Amino acid sequence: MRREQNTDADLVAACRRGSAAAQEQLYQRFAPKMLALCLCYVHHQFDAEDVLARGFVKVFRYLGQFEGKGSLEGWVRRIMVHEALSCLRRRESLTLHLEDCYTGHLATDLPNAEAELQAADLLRLVQELPAGYRAVFNLCALEGYTHPEAAALLGISEGTSKSQLSKARAVLQRQVAALQSSLSTSYAHAHVA
Image (cartoon, rainbow, N blue to C red; front, side, top):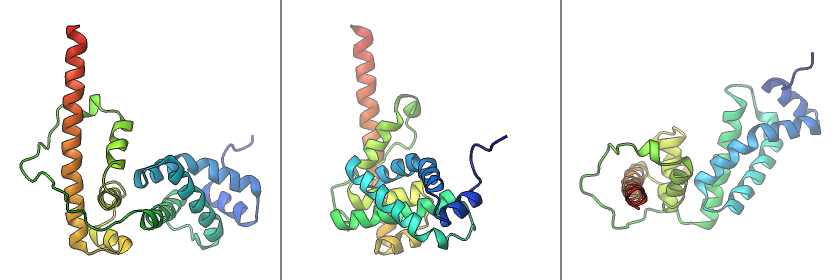
């Protein structure tokens, strides 16, 4: 009985030997997740695909440095995050945006938000954040980096990282509330008509 999928160690070993089939398998295994990750950091599909391609070039170039400590997916993910941040640095400012953010009380419990909002809506809202907010939000809230780690990756202070995450959350809460309101209004009009 033939195994459908190699273990990570088998796959890495075959890639290191130069197996094109193993490289294709590694790419196919991780590309969809990594493209979704890249889209969290950059605005456009084209840019995300460019980050993905550049990231996989680095994955294959540095695969010899993968020591098997931790998961292969986590190692590939870190490369993609670094590549996405490099793309952001080249194309957008990651400095603190001093936009007029709402600083009053924000609702922290949005009833039924999860039920009515689709993942695509939430991804779009995150993508609409200014580059600095988006990068810090993705690193800290989604990827689990600490503020010191995010600050080091982005070349900003820890305080700036904390501030940008706080403001990103405030903006997202406002956007989710507005989206919820428009969904409720649309739902009400649809049932009245």
